Image (cartoon, rainbow, N blue to C red; front, side):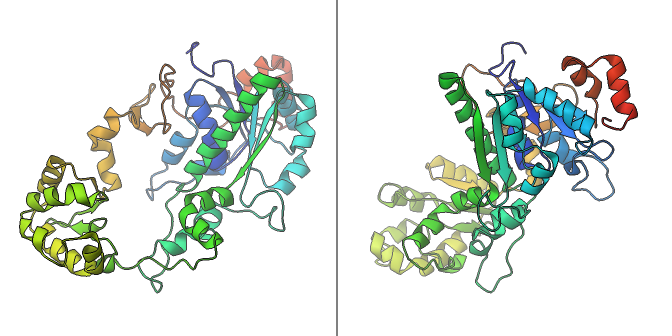
Length: 398
């Protein structure tokens, strides 16, 4: 699409796994030309994982690398680095999450690239930041975002319950959105000043931001206790309940004065309106455990589908505890544009999580094979056919 928001924007995705590359994916969704740099042979290590044992299908890769062109370069080879430098000379954005010592060894730090292109936006992503004793430490979202920041500890059912593992990419994808925001902010500054610059983000920072309510409480010196069991929730009307068919949903009824009477009428318990245990806000807080027991019995009397109709009918804010297997059939997810079809193959993909009126996202294309566009990209950078073959023969490209 020639009229996309980022048409003409050249982005070099010199990153691996998820967070850095996913920031480039968002740029690609709005029309940027993203060149994915991968090592010849094995490619980006994120190509390998598959959630289905025995099925060598790169499901994860299709999400994180859609719309991109793959250039297989051996950056340990002087000729491979020279090719990358030539691309950097004409690029707008360079994204990397290589560990800091690796960048230094490969001469890919901002001190190496920024002097070549004063308009370049150098987007740096790390696990623990770029200063301090742990700046060079490697990490994934499971270790730096989920575990280190208190999220893993705070969501367990009791202090004695083993911590829950995170889902793949659970911290990487929101972190990628933050890195995208930093890149676009720098592009805005470049429009005003003509100068590029370095933007930085990390899994640690994004995990703290995600857990910001608890962390900010602690920063004011307060102890942050584990949340109580569901049965002992301090607000029975902002709690989750199980239906007759074994499904769960969670209510978020925070305007009790306006909504409580309608809720009680809808569930057939108008008698609770005058029950002194639940008649006032303070009374409901003091007797939250008793109200949870009452509501447990009520909601266990009907199936989820019926409760959805009833609660929607009286305007109660609630959400079903959905399963991943239900997502592909969720009509609302398709209607709001959260799931979109691939333009060049069957199936759906998860869309960038925001829209900009008047700036349509490009129809998503399938992720590339390793080095699929190596010759094409190098020709655009000024290499002749003979030079490309020589690079291939020397092992600098794949």
